[in-house]
Amino acid sequence: MRPALHFMVGMLPRTLLALMVLATSQSALAALPLDQLRLPPGFRIEVLTDDVPGARAMAMSPSGTLFVGSRSEGKLYAVSDALGTRPRVRTVASGLRNPLGVAFHDGSLYASSVSKIVRLDQIEARLDQPPAPRVVSDRFPSDGHHGGKFIGFGPDGYLYVATGAPCNVCEPDETRYANIVRMKPDGTGLQVVARGVRNTVGFDWHPATRELWFTDNGRDRMGDDVPDDELNRVTAPGQHFGYPYCHAGNVADPEYGGKRPCSEFVPPVARLGAHVAALGMRFYTGTQFPPDYRNNVLIAEHGSWDRSEPSGYRVVRVVLDGAGKAVRQEVFAQGWLRGGRAWGRPADVLVAPDGSLLVSDDHAGAIYRIRYQP
Image (cartoon, rainbow, N blue to C red):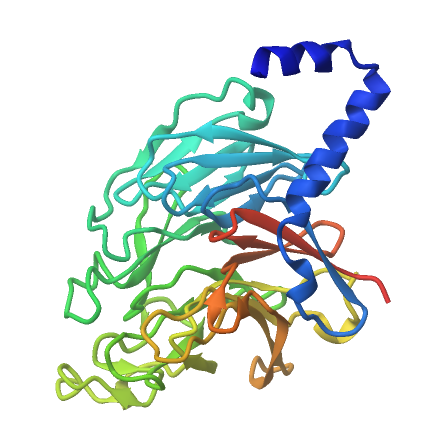
């Protein structure tokens, strides 16, 4: 049947063929039940593509190419014309190990691969024939548990890399695990920025203060409602955020809490709820959303597994005052969880150049775009 079909398509007029391709694409995207999603008044959501299996962290080049890491496919993706009418998805690397983290810097795509950071040079000029990844640093642990690494370039020009704890709860080497480090783009000058971070899969820098903020996933097996996931702020290099001794700023660990009190550690800016799996977070720096969204934190909550009633599976908004204090939290987008079952799981958020918000979904393999159109 396939040869006959190709022959028939080849005989069709170009205009009709284009309409058929567009209709097929729209039909595939329509399979995702966007009508179940709920946003504040004036906002709308659409699917840019549902052809990015395991979509996780996102980074966009100045020219508008969206790069996407993946959780389990071992692949890196590039979406050209991401905000246009005909986004095109290409695989630019494969065979990597859990390459969920991506960052774009000086024409190169950086990506995590558990024990190493790799780089694809001049990637945008070579999307159809991408270069082989070059190792920037192979100094990271090879443990698979919490081994996927979120990465990003800070305003200081350094590449920041998060390494989770190799366990649910344990007392690992703080110079290698449960931390955030930074290094120069060539992999040299490695420094620990934050310690006692169980597993962060999202961080960003405050637009005004340039301080590093990050989410952190709380430990499991302490019940439905303890401990909370966290939103944290680094105000000085090398600060300790509690793991494994203290969780969410005020919950002593039943095994390790007796060794060091919670008062020794930096408390979170906000407690986000237990087991919501707070992953990607960004400050809203665009101008498309209403003015009161400016410099708010938007967080992708991937959703719980260690809870009798599921929680998360949404995007939340944390409103900050001028001093960086969280004054309230509210749900921004929800509906991926229906009747106790999830058809989507938000993994990362990214503010696009036009001020819209992109949301990756590793369960549906999709990238969504949220716009304000009152």
